[in-house]
Amino acid sequence: MFKRWLILIVAVLYLSGCGTQENEAEESPPEETTEEVTEEEASAPSEEPEDTEEPSISPESMTAESIVDAVEAQAGENLNYYLHTRISMEYQEETQVSETKEWYHTEDDKSFVRREVHTEDLPVQYYVSDGEKTWQYSEGDAVAYVSDAMHGGDMTARPSSAIGNRLRSYQESHTMALEETVEIAGYTGHHIAFTPKEETGGTTLDVYLNIENGLILKEDMIQDGHQMVYELLEYDGAIEHSAGRYTLDLPEDVEIIDMSQPEPETDLDSF
Image (cartoon, rainbow, N blue to C red; front, side, top):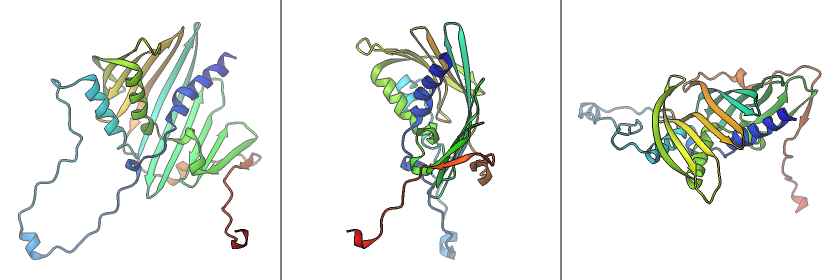
């Protein structure tokens, strides 16, 4: 019963919590076109290139609010990346650990996703999308589910899509204080302590944010004897695309249940 409770909490807090729709920032930029350069253009003095890097925050002006704003802005720039994270749940001296490996790629109007959830003593869960279809399968099950990509559910949404929403939600219900800076998984983590406002009766949160990558490196929450710790183990912000990564190899005896939406009626006689 404890394990079932833990898996439910994990899903609610982080996997379902990622369920925001892909925003416009995640669309691929248009391809550049090459134009012939005239002699006049070639002889003209070149203009200084614009600085496209995210503005840094000086130590003097660094506040909890400025860090949250910078992380939210950078999170939307994460398009092609790999994440390996861990969630540890503790309750009454019992602990259960779940690790998630995630790959994301954006190409044209397609969003490729592969998520593997590894929980001790439980089958590996797979959520895979090639931009058109989404597959869900639990290792050892007799059935797998396939649906249209747009109806794939929260389990294939990008974590980077939810970071801003989650941090804004924390700001509304908590006060913030900037604490010490620590190193987590090789990245600088700015520690922000979120204390619940009296009227909300929420949970105290310790969140460690990285400005350069727009990541939550670690998050620690404790309430009523329950502790959940989320932490980044590995991150790659420029993975190479591999189409085979976003396919799901199923055993031959697995039944596939198609949950795709039916095509709309095109028969004019039906009007």
